[in-house]
Length: 265
Image (cartoon, rainbow, N blue to C red; front, side, top):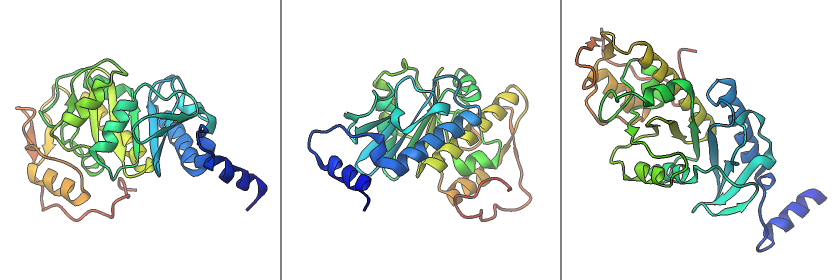
């Protein structure tokens, strides 16, 4: 063990000392990379959006007012699993939202909240159905996200946002926040980021086809795809647009590639 490593180990054991993200090096680097990936995908304008990752019995979260594309390890806040601030800068005001998403699925270790253009725009419209604001138009959103309910509006940073997530009877790994944006959780940071990117694309396609006679993926195919990929889908697959005609598949759904693989590439 190097002298620097020994000093880090000793300091981490000192009672009452504030932790820093530098002591969670790997998780911190992944969180920095995730922020940059979201900005590169056009999903985090300005200083909007926040990301967190669970690292053991701690959460690392982007600090308040930080720009996701310019993150450094010192910009990350350290919290305990109840949301108490342990070190680093003040966390994003959306702590309650992130904690609620972790409680929703304890197997998930990362949460992304963005104000991406298409997700925000779709969150300002009436939802496609009671269980999903996003209609089943492409298999990719079904494979990576599943149903995406629209949660009622509360002001950004209001702890009531966490209660809306916790009180929802619907299972979901992504939701639209009315007139606000999107929140997504995942088993790890990469899957949370990729699901967020796929959700934005699904919202964009929903907006582009809004008001048209859309052809939805057939209900049996929706159920087969989401079941095979382990994604939530609890409502009827054809309940939204009354004028939409479900596509009749030529054959039954095939077994998809292993989880983690994405689109056709």
